Length: 417
View 1 (cartoon, rainbow, N blue to C red):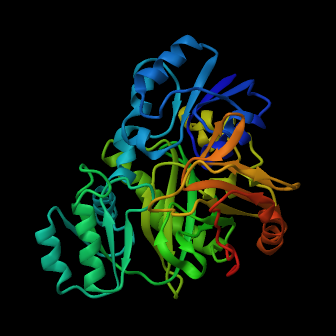
View 2 (cartoon, helix red, strand yellow):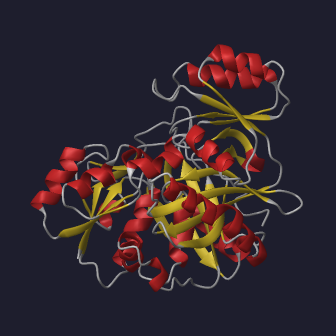
């Protein structure tokens, strides 16, 4: 069979590589892809939000019998609905189900209405209302843009001044004119864990746990980013904790979506905070594979990804057994100078000896036969080992064999583990 993957980042490159491992797959296409994906798939020059362009490609390429929609924005825009309505099989949640990510206000209300443990919050639709609250709030406080913001719409505010500045930026249209609602959330203390899960709207099968590193610089300093690296699994996410999360968070979330008539079928991301006394809280949902978590989780997957996708679409996830490799993996993101605010682009990338590791392309472009940087997060280098420490040693030993002007990366990914 032939498969089309929608997207152009490191997550999509990891998905493409894993699909290529399937004996059932003849050819993978990717729209629009990037310079690295082009080595593993046939790239199609169609944007992720170009519904008519994607439909035209599928109508002209009948061999493509499954489209995997990976990024948040086409999911929120209803691409899965559109393709299904036009007779094409698509993997991913509908527009209605994707609102669990595309609106943080919707997600928080879902949590509260269904007694899913989360931080207390307030919502605001104007700067005047938010200011009145922020003037007397307790700090630290978390300020979030309601809609999609590519991982950058979250502010950890230590003071009223920081919170007011964050609120002003969001209401001022920093993340788009349509994304001008704000929530202020109580600050939770503990250890963050990312848990992605496969679900067909009935059965929930968590993947290996992972830990993302959101801040741009070492020691969790600097601005929030889309993610600077990750490792999997987390030793702090024990079997006992996983069982608690299943009963308190995972199942109730899927059941709540069903009650609303928004059956969720695809990959759901649970961003968790584990308190110092071991209690889990849900920080956020994503309606798709995380990035860069996908780059550490999928290399450890043993089961054919195509089999999983089809079981989810056909609502028979309970009929297959999903298996994982032993060991751990770590990925480190190589970013461009100026990321996340104003990354430089167009720098030539050279790759030396990275034997034994996997390089995923994110913001790259083929220009006159050379690979150049074309975004904030440019590459992700992934290694596996029997432990996080051994995987970490492999990656950092060879990471400087990759070079481009302005390249920077965190040197402490996985060090706490």
